[in-house]
Length: 262
Image (cartoon, rainbow, N blue to C red; front, side):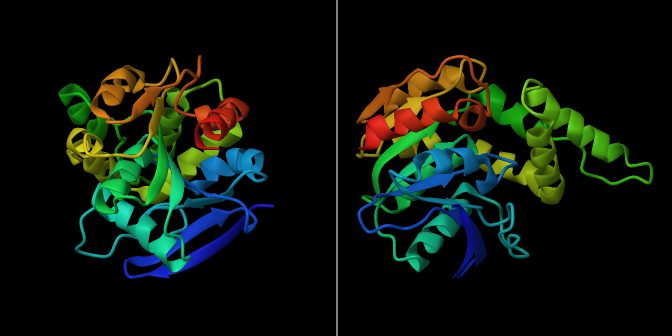
């Protein structure tokens, strides 16, 4: 059974999903993409509940966590701090960490800021962005301004649905609603990832790190260059998958995690 809870931290209340804690199970922290939340990991958490104590926090400013404080800047460092403070509140000093897209950047920052926190890392869709992607990513976000006719709702739906029209309408609706809730912070999150010095950070990471991306993932081309930068990096294959690989290929992703971590 997956439960919901909050951790009270210095940056605000952090919402997280978690499986049943058992003394003999290692901890696995799952870090989401933009504009998503820990909800994207429900199927994966269900699949892994017998093998790990799974925690999927919503970064500060995302999902059901508090908004970023007025005057504070959205940054990967802030997102990672919100995760670290959540883990600290829960008494977790070490964990296996899985990140997807924005979650990869946050995972790298988490280990960079807290060396040794991560037993092992798994990067799904590494954010080693080209200069072109650094420009294109924030500009790809739809206009968040509201209008009387509700045209902005259609813009969000079309943007999210275009990511992968083969997934269920329910999945696209969930992501659209999360994007709507982010509002202007959607673009700020992408800007944070574009400004993040991922390359320098991963070059210092000493724990074993597994890297993969689906064949239809926009970040697939970044897998091998990321592995080359990592002191202990290795590549895995997942096949014909998109940005929603954790929900469309749940069993395969779970198997990769178990084989690498256990």
